[in-house]
Image (cartoon, rainbow, N blue to C red; front, side):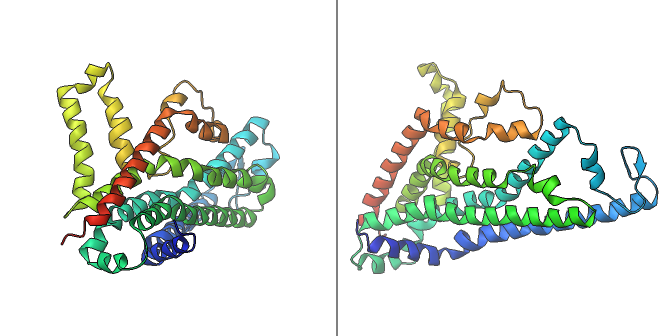
Length: 332
């Protein structure tokens, strides 16, 4: 693979899909901030009305001029401080999640059309006339879906998180509160940022089965690649369920849906690598415990599972098959 050609191919993918890779995460982040500010305005109006009616109280004291956040921290107990810290961290995580939610849909439809669209508009003939191999072209699309798009979504997510904290800090200041004491001190913005950055390698490996499957369908399907990509795994799951085929292997039907159907269709969505079953017996007492369940140790323990590596191997095999298909499939 040519070290000079590959970056050019990545730039080509970015500029051709700038709307999905760059603008979609930013729009999602902006939408979250707009909704947050709308909720703040509604809350401010409701608080002012409650204060004027004498119904707004903190620790039994009636607040005449609205909320006073200094009252929240003056008599705060240690357990309340822990819950506050967990609530701040969870809020930051939710603020940063909007671009990542959009990322799943962007990558899904990007991979689905990556090789199909160039055959549909006949641009594949032009690209094949250039001194660029099929492998370089396909792997540039894999790198765009598994690295470029997630990194751009990460940047948008971090921007949304810190912008959210700034907005909430201004609200705290307007109500005689100390943002350092109430938000930035209890919260862990750097830790949450590091957690999001550390999730990129996990998501990269985890997403390979879906990326490979969608690229394979994109290279193979003559029409309607979305239907082929979705219906084949779903119908396979229905057949396995209908005839109870997994009983032959002494396994539950749910295993097939989780490890085959879901891995082929949903692995590009961030966070789907979280195994909820391992938290079934864990007691969660407040948001702080919930954040600890998503620790770096828990995240990278995914690499100890055979599931992620078997899926990655299957994904690479399907990507290689997509490379082979692109060599001769131009719909002539």
